[in-house]
Length: 244
Image (cartoon, rainbow, N blue to C red; front, side, top):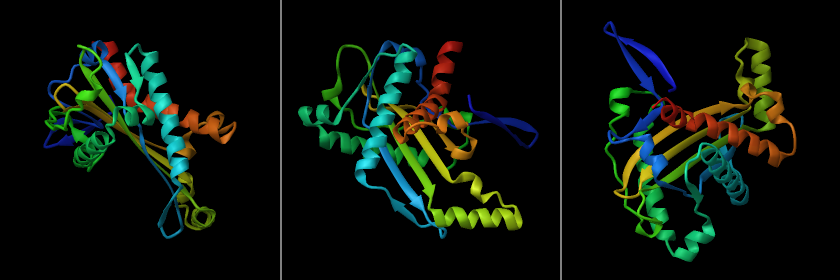
């Protein structure tokens, strides 16, 4: 489960990128209904001085929709009962304000939980945080879980890439290895009581992605990369269920 060992005072402490509540039970998620909230995607370019310039909103919305579709596909592959809440659904239900409030509360929680990628299991597996319940999203008598994804993608400008290539040649910094980087955090909220339930965060650099994933149209490449990151991020959730 994305664990690495840390030796402290002669004892081994397991670290993890996963966070979940003490009540977490994967079987409960599988027995319930899962609703995917639209992804919050941020895409930016970084110049040689490290200054970020965000892409236009249309492209970020495009990436967000690709990620939403991919999360839906991956969870369904593993027989989870899941539906996607579209922006049209949100408008029809007139819950835009509630979704925004949920996002703000959730983002505050994960910002605190992921000040560092790694956390000792004892603390990581006993999270006690809550958000407001959205009763409008209760679909049946089954427990409802809300899935939220935060995605951040960055790419270097041509000037930054050239500068880093020169640095590599002169002093072997390997700065050019990460021309493009991505970070994804997927979390689950128990909508019956508003409790934070589960999350995991992963990151990737284009340099470590196989050539096969970098072939095709830009849309196809985006879909391949998003599916790869989603599988990696959700792997501890799926793996734990299979081992139960």
